[in-house]
Image (cartoon, rainbow, N blue to C red; front, side, top):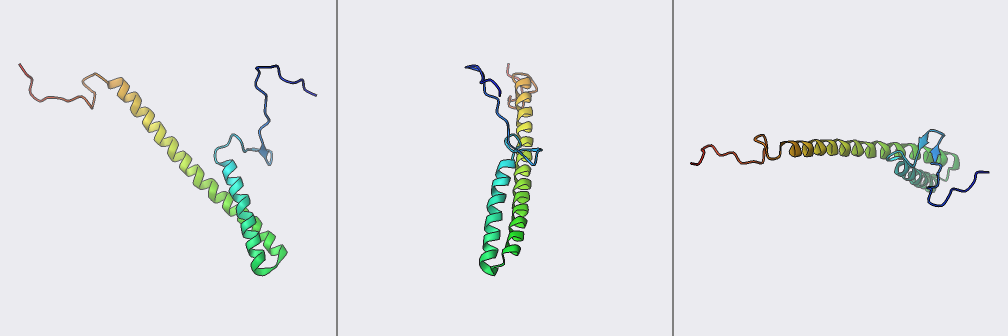
Length: 118
């Protein structure tokens, strides 16, 4: 049995790993995809059962619903995540350029007069 952590030390938490390799806590989009997939599974399986009253086939539909909804949510979320990361990187580069060129003759916001005043 491990000794309790000293006061002031952060507790070491074990992250939840799904199937031994998917770290649900630290992987972006994993938690939401699994939750929506579970809900999709229940809705698809129960909906099919209400229409057909076939238990085995409804379980198959539920598993299929889980897979489809989980993958759909995963790809949609990861696409938006990647798009956001690209936008953040572009904004970061633009801020670096602004800081670098601010106050110089290369500053795009600085007004350039064609004629010099005497």
